[in-house]
Amino acid sequence: MTLTTQITWLLLLAIPIACVAWTVTHEEVFREPREYCLRRSKEDRALLVRKFFYLFTCEYCFSHYVTIIFLFLTGYHLLMADWRGYLVAGFALVYVANAYMSLFGLIRQDIVKEKAEIKCLNKEAKEQKPERHV
Image (cartoon, rainbow, N blue to C red):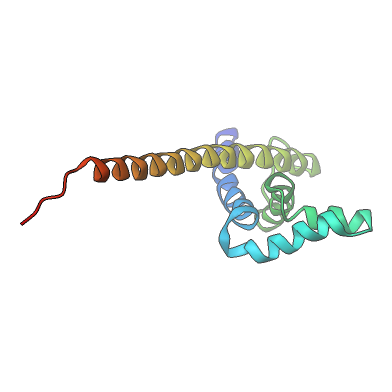
C-alpha cells in the first residue's frame, strides 16, 4: 500500500471511529447507559471496576477501544507491514479521530450559541413590535 493510500485510509477510517466514540459518550440515545457507567465510575469500591466504567464516559478513552475494533476489522496498518504498523496506525487513528471530535464539538457549540442568540433576538423583536389592531 502506498503512503498516499495509507494516509487516505487514516483520514477516512478515523471518521467512523470518531462517530462511534462521540455517539456513545455524548448523544442522547446512550444517555441512560452512560449515566449508569458514570455513576459506577465514581461510586464503585474497586479501582478496576471504576476504570472500566469510566471508559464509556470519556470519548478519548473510548476511542482507543473503538480503534482496536476497527483495526481488527480492516487490518489497516501504517508505515510498516508488521505489528509495529498496527501500533502506529492505532495511535494515529486515535489522534485523528479525537481531532475530528474536537472540531465537531466546537462546531456544535457554535451552532448552539447561534440558536440561542437567534432565539433572544426573536424575543426582543416581538417585544419591540407594536401590536396591530384590526
